[in-house]
Length: 82
Image (tube, rainbow, N blue to C red; front, side, top):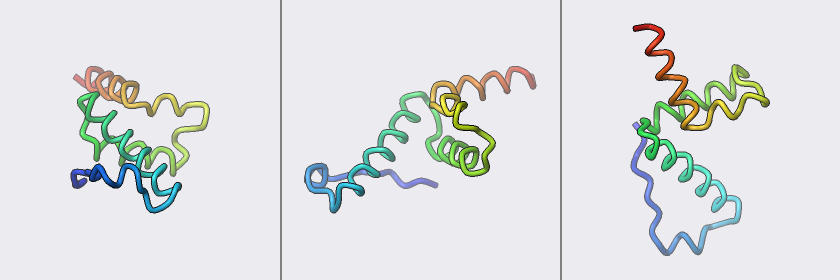
């Protein structure tokens, strides 16, 4: 299970490195976007990362992994099964 990620206010301005700050920003953005779309952030990230690493999703298909598109695809799959 993912732990709740929180960054103290003081760290927003003093990241240990520029790369670390960018990584934190990307991860935070992904998690919050998943939450805003009513998704389980852990399930979303696991699926998206597996699809990217395995090559199941090609570069020209990356838009399908955006939280709102990913959610719509999961809902369509559920309707098709029902």
